[in-house]
Each structure stands twice: as structure tokens, then as C-alpha cells.
Length: 342
Ligand code: NAD
Ligand code: LMR
Image (spheres, rainbow, N blue to C red):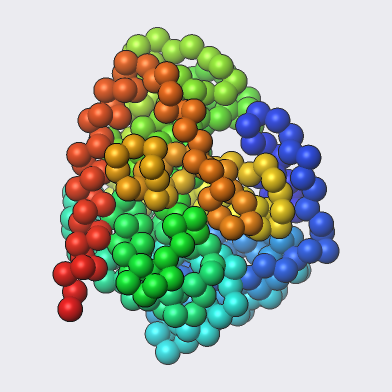
């Protein structure tokens, strides 16, 4: 519960009036790719949520041992394991939130194209199962390259006739978590107070932290803006290099993904004050998908927060212009992958 209260307490620099009902543990969450580096710590963090009644762990292998281990934690959620594609449909029945993190992480030197070639067909088949078994669920996509995977998923859902743009999310919370951490350290803010919106996408220069919109308001020199922006954009690569072939970030993304799940559950539970950054279908720019701060409600995205994109600094405006072609190419690639299939 302490974890949940931390997530619940701090948004927009003020304490929410929302108080979850400790008896209302009634939401079902499915994690697809649960046996992996992110899936295991994420499952643990979600098991700690008092809002969750059931966690369905799905993977192609090694699920049952994790299920047995996790199920002994004396928190309310029941843990159920599902192994292999014959059990995928059952893992999705009746779920409120599906988290997709199945697929390979990058190794040093790998390109986003390399990653796309492996992960696109995995995400496509999982989303087809989501469309068939839980089309009303909130869908959180973590698998990379996320800039392409979310448009790919949207296209699959559209072709299946069940696409609800308000319920499909690319999880960019890790970029916000990193931005908050780096800015708080640089400016001696309390970590719990720092709040930096991050817009665009989730890869390299498409990650655009809007430092001028940091709350509480702080000023940065031009050098600090450049240094912090590049650090936030490259933080994923830093971890890939530190792990030297053993994958990418797992613990920090599990923390970030758990925060996004918890925010979604609070929104479903009626909290009227839930804001997160996420990569969603958007009309804030000329691109059909764009990460921005969004207001979450019972039906998914209730509003896109456009004010963060107003009165950008010259640096931010230039960076926004620079990221658009790369983000557009990633979006087109995801959509084309589905459209070219027979
Ligand atoms: P991992 O290799 O440790 O785990 C991936 C899991 O997916 C494995 O358990 C594997 O068995 C499973 N899997 C593979 N194909 C599957 C299928 N068809 N159905 C179900 N499960 C399947 O990788 P990881 O470190 O957990 O990373 C997972 C993904 O998340 C990668 O693509 C990585 O790049 C991405 N990632 C995203 C972010 C983000 O912020 N969005 C951050 C870090 C990593
Ligand atoms: C990250 O931001 O750490 C990840 O997106 C890196 C990756 O490709 O898995």
C-alpha cells in the first residue's frame, strides 16, 4: 500500500483528494511477456496494488515458477499463470488492463530496425488476441520500438473493428521518471516534487523533455538544457551499454510501468485527477500519434493537455521540429507492417 500511496499522492505538485477504497481490489491485469526481465519485477509491483484482484501472467515459457513464487505474497491479488499460445486467450478474458512487454530488448549496436524486425510480429499476434478477447481493456505497450508498435497495434485493432484510440497507450513513463530524477538532482529539488512533461515519442531525439514546463518552476542555463535533454534522450542507451549485451532497462521501467498501471486503475476507479504522459493517438501536432500529458478517466484518455506545447522555448521548438520526420517514419513503418500483410 505504501507504494500505491506514493504514486497516488504526487501529481501536478499537489496531493490528490482521491482516496482508494482498500476493499475495492477488483481489477484484473494481464502481463504479456511476464517471465522476462521487466515482466518479473513489474508483476511483483502490481501484486502490491490494493486495487488489483487478479494478475494473469502470460509468456511462452517459465511462467509457472514465477506464478508459484509470487502467489505467496500476502496481498489481495490472485496470481494465475498461462503458458504458450494455446493459453493466451484465457489469459485475456475479462481483464481491465493489458500490459504488452513481450519481445526482445536491444543489445549494444542494435538498430531500431533490427528490433522492429523481431518484435513486430510478436506484438501483432498478441494484439490480435487482445482484439478477440478483451477489446474493452486499456492496452499498455512497452515493447520497442514503441514509436512503431503503438501505430501497428492501432492498425490491427482498426482492422478487427475494435479500435478505441482512448484506450491504447505507449508507455513513456520511464522518460518522465528519468527526466524528474535528473532535473531534481541538478536543481536540488525534492525528488517527489520534480515534474517534467516529456513529449514526442520514446526513442533518441523523439524524446523531448519540456524543461521550460518543469514544476516547480526552475530556470536552466542553455548549457543545462542541452546537457539534460541529451542525458534524458540517451538514458536508455546508457543502460544498454552498462548491461553489455544482457538487455536494456528492466527495474526502472518496471517501476515506471507499475506507476502507469496504477494511474490507469485509479482512473478506472473514479479518481478524477489522474494525469500521465503517454504516447497516444493525438491531434496536438500533424502526426497521428504523439506523446504528451493526458488526463485519464474511466474510458481512457479524457483529454490531451495541449498547454505544455504552447510557449515553447526556441530550443524546444527546434527540437520538436527536428523530431517530427523521424517519428513520422516510425509511425508509417508500424502501420505499413500490418497493411502489407495478406
Ligand atoms: P526479456 O527478453 O527479458 O523478456 C521478454 C519476454 O518476452 C521473455 O520472457 C520472452 O519469453 C517473452 N516473449 C517473447 N515472445 C513472446 C510471445 N510471442 N508471447 C509472449 N511472450 C513472449 O526483455 P525485457 O527486458 O523484459 O524487455 C521487453 C521489451 O521491452 C523489449 O522490447 C525492450 O526493448 C522493451 N523496453 C521498453 C521500455 C520502455 O520504456 N518502453 C524500456 C525498457 C525495455
Ligand atoms: C529504454 O528507454 O531504456 C528502453 O526503451 C531501451 C530499450 O530499447 O529497451
